[in-house]
Amino acid sequence: MPEAGRVSFDLSGKTIFVAGHTGMVGSALLRRLEQENCDILTVSRDCVDLTQQTQTHTFLEHAKPDVVVVAAAKVGGIWANNQYPADFLYDNLAIETNLIRSAYATGVKKLLFLGSSCIYPKHAAQPIEEEALLSGPLEPTNEWYALAKIAGVKLCQAFRRQHGCDFISAMPTNLYGPGDNFDLNSSHVLPALLRKVHEAKERGASNFEIWGTGSPRREFLHCDDCADALVHLLKNYSEEGHINVGCGSDISILELAQMISKELGYRGGILLDNAKPDGTPRKLMSSSRLQELGWTPSISLEVGIQLTYQWYLEKVALKEIL
Image 1 (cartoon, rainbow, N blue to C red):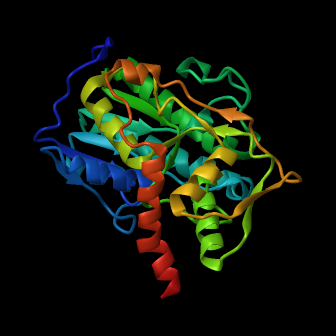
Image 2: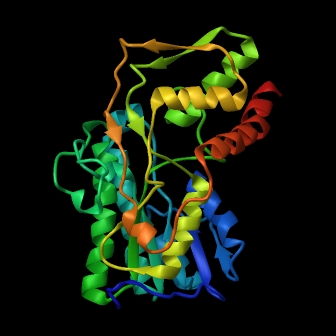
């Protein structure tokens, strides 16, 4: 298998199995793949339990996809990771090992494993380059999930080395967009802030509150941009090393809250709860390798917030009212 990095892999006429198609990234991938001349394959959890080796292997053996995208995972916030460490480690290990091993055994031509930026050390130098992997201790609050994702990256590398499989790995940054989780108790920062601003606006509240000083900086990528990047990698990337998927710029939490307020037309104030923790001061990934392959994002954060808010109003807020 070529190791030069850039290749040409034609998706035309291929059958592509998207594992985890109901999630935010999986759903975005389905939308993006509709633009390709390919057959899209999905399966419900009721039909195939990907944590079960025999079920997974039998499905791939019968379906015979040309390409597998591993977007399926057990996910959750800090509370869930702390409460169910065995589930997060075992379930994610089972899903990825079953899919990767069965993809090899059934002759899948290309596999893309989706990781997470949490695989990097807690105190990695910024912006985080791919080489930072395994260079320091992980963030303790999500180490179980991170360890499983690291194992998936290494398993793809191992199958490339031993069997010549065209298996690659991508590490997305913080994602948001349609299909996101807007539950204030378990959601990530952008959807949580969007909901807070929406509810403050609906109530006519004079302000809303955010945790900490608002100074931590985070990088955000719209899920549709992520899906486009993943399709680009399927077509143009074949290398043992994993590759970061991000936008290359970050924003403070306070600036993000101000931007969401502006985009939603909320004119109230923002209160900072300095008694609450800030978390990691900065988390920005280097996406220079992806840019060298010819891909850059097309959805600005402002536009992405507008699109996400429209989806939230149609799919979440309206349903809760009804």
